[in-house]
Image (cartoon, rainbow, N blue to C red):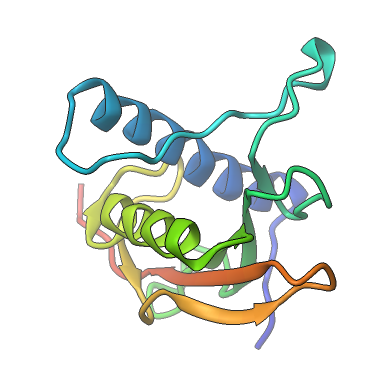
Length: 155
């Protein structure tokens, strides 16, 4: 079964919520001086000519080091608690020693978190380990992380 959408706004809200959470938590961990923490993100701002390095839906060809969040399936319908939204994060890097730690730090931020995504209550659960899945046309490594919002807490 493919991605059931109540409207493009729901998909956009999910992806934006994941992006905003990652940006905020990465900045907080860096500011707190968390040992070994190197992950940071810049959100693109076309109006201010800020190129950015974290995107939703599509990863542009530049910058070379970039991260994208894409929907992968599952309905956004709360009426069916057995089927929840899923998404994938792709990390593009020229080097494994840069991309793998980045994917591991992203996984630390997301996996097993509860109620952190605006409009999408529940637990974020990784559905696999981070790893190099393929290379792009330019020879960059693409690491992928897959997640599902698996369960909800009653209010």
